[in-house]
Length: 155
Image (cartoon, rainbow, N blue to C red; front, side, top):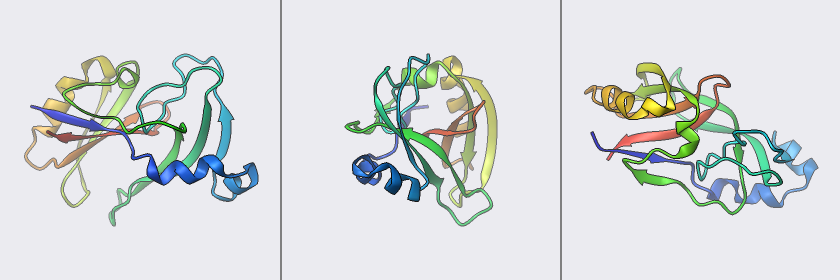
């Protein structure tokens, strides 16, 4: 089944990069400089990993803003100057190298199904879970940390 993976739009985060540390703290966010951790810190806009020395903002983001028990928000990293990842039938390297939790939701935002998946086998899980008639879209999360990673839709 053709699928489309998207990162977050950069527009909501643009103001954060110009704030002082105190102003960021007031918004439950912090500025960080990437170290040499491998893999790097995952930017949710471009779906790429940081390189040592990259500027980052760690912020709280509501990625599933729906009026159901499955409403979700969590910490995410974003980098300034990034463009939104948006591709059909392609898996970014950032998702390939991690263990993921795949969760499908119906049109009302209620959970349909879920599965843990090694990113190297993501196509199979997308095909199976989004192939369920009740599934409208999928969210990917980093399994260990629980952070939101990306959205998957049928293409």
